[in-house]
Image 1 (cartoon, rainbow, N blue to C red):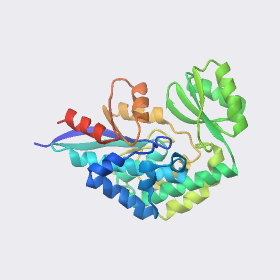
Image 2: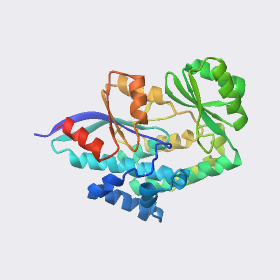
Image 3: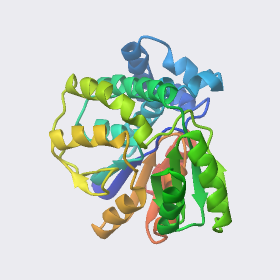
Image 4: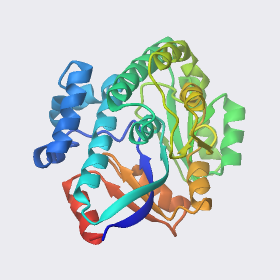
Length: 313
C-alpha cells in the first residue's frame, strides 16, 4: 500500500556547483540523462560536459553555473520520485535560495524546465553585466546578530544580502564598502568574517542595472499559479499567484534573501521534514542551525539517493 510523506523541498543557489556534479546520476538513471540532454538541447551547447568534466573556471561563470545547478537539482528530484516504490512525496511548500527559487518554480509547475533553464542563463548573464558596470563583492559575517550586522552596514554603506541563520549574515556592496565592513565587523566581535569568491555584489542595489533586462525576459515566459506555496526570498512568506511570483523574481535581484524567516515560516506552518535537492548540503546545514528539531535529508548523488530510499523503505 502506497504511503505518503509530507515534505518541504529546498533548492540551493549559486556557489554550490562542483565539477562532476550529476555525473553518477546520468550514468545510472535514464531519467537523469534525459534531464541533462534537455539542458544541452535548450541552451545550445554541452552544459553537461562542462558540469561533468569542467574546467572549474568555466563552470563558475554565472551564466553556466546557474542552469547547471538547476539541472542537477531537477535530476535529483525526478530520480528520487521514480526510485521511491511505496511512497509518494507530498510537498507542503517549496523554497530555494536565490537561484534555487527558480528551481522551486520548475518543480512546482509554475514554469517549465526548458524555460527555467533559459531564464536562469539570462539571469546569470545580466548579473555578470551588472557586476562589470558596478563592480562589487560579498562577505559572510559569522557570529554577529542581524541587528549588529545592520549597524555594520549603516557605518560602511554595505548592504545585508542574505540572512542565512541567526548568526550567519552575508553582506554585499562595492569593494571599498565591503572592505570597510569586514574590518568593522571584526572589531565588533564577529567570530569569523569571510570574503566570498564572487564576481559581484549580488542581492544589493548594485544589481539594479540588471532589472530592466530581467523584466523583459520574465515577460516572455509563461507563468502558472502554483498549487504548492512558494516561500518568497524577499519576504519569507508564501506566494501562489503567477503575477506575484514574477514580481518576486524581479525584486530578488536587489533584495535580501530572508532564508532564516523562510525556514521559520515553514516550521511554524507544520513542516517537519525538509529535503534539499542539488549538488551540496549547504541549505541542509543552515536549516539544522535554524531549527535542530526538524529532519533534513540531502539528495545530491546516487549514494545519497540510495541512503534515502533505504531509510524510508
